[in-house]
Length: 582
Image (cartoon, rainbow, N blue to C red; front, side):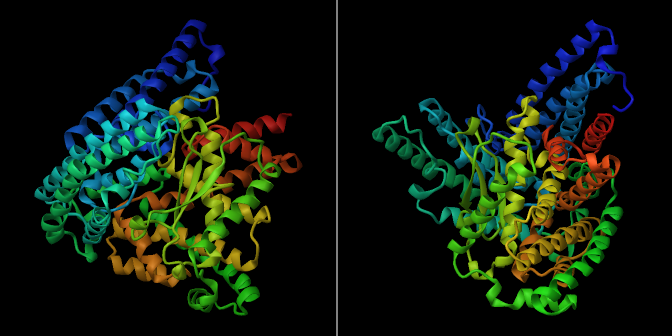
């Protein structure tokens, strides 16, 4: 893109045609990806797809990949030189997203990695996203019931694909199969009337009788159609996949046919860079080494010891540093969000965005869930953003980590980024993004954990130890994810490495490692993305000197929604050059 002549230097008719083609292709791509994966559309708050279910079969994936490839072919025919700078960015973002989505469908790593993870397990994604649909009227309710009718076939198609994959000699990891079994068992143990698929929020415009009728209909579908299909999936996992599953010594995706190529593609997709697994592995080790001095300094002030192993041990073992009830967790993250919102305008341009709520994660999902995740607003603000936080077993949760967690998931992290993106004058496929541009999205979230320290948002040095704890965790991810999936580490080797280099509990370490097993490559996005944002900020500050404006810098980083890191470099470079001339 760099060096290409500006659009106004090209012949006007050709430029206008290229611009129109890109606009039409943007709309088509948005429709294609969400028709292929309507559960993600619901998760992102995109309306219009809430009556659809995906086709998780291999043939369904092939059709989706073909549709995306057709978009890529037409996109490649649009000459960048005919486009404005803004449209060149849109073209570059679409090229990355389309290639990544197609690659994901083609490799289909999830079929050889059964799990309960929400983003990488199709059945778990259904549990998480379907109940969040925004139903505004009776037509939406009818569409929701159509989707419920389709879920039985969806679960049966997952069962068939797992069975086909096992027959091909691509066994899932044992730990992931057990998680999926536990998850399905938990959902099936509930009374159908209390099922989350039945308890969806219904429109206020419906009468009480209409609402009762809708819930009866949903409960009937769950009981007579969906749950029998879930039981068939559970039986497949228990009787067929589990006996042949990969043992803990071979959890890496490298141990299944096509796994090494799939992992290489996943690394490129999630980091949005060309870094190799070897380079990423070493970056992780270097980051851990760089944290030692901070651990020593802060540990000396808070705990009276500068010996890093002792600091880590004290943080793990001191019961006073843990919560005693779930309400304390909710209060901690709520307070952090409120402080960040109060300070927001001093560090960012003014954004008119929906609010963010705190939502406790369903206890059924607690055994397989991360500590928290973020769900964007939906339906033009009818559904607020949500920092979904794990509150079960509070006595196992470190109180000093949850402020950093809140700054990552809510404001100034994912909520500010995701909600502000929806307000931008950009094509829809760029306004509604999440894990599709993971290096940027998770890099921003991790950047905000440190930024919150600059903003004075942490309430104590003890809470700042939580910031270091999460830094160490994300650095370990680079080592452990590549360790298992590229170098072939065992699950226990990964657990031992994280135990030696973080302050978190063994239970959380196991949860983290199992997440990396289930979702190869995603864990690499956080630290790789944060390092790049910090590098761009340092470069801009050095080049602009006293003219550097942190609010303006953040406005540039957030001003084009989520973009690949190479595109972000170009955007910051253009801003820096313009600011230097002004």
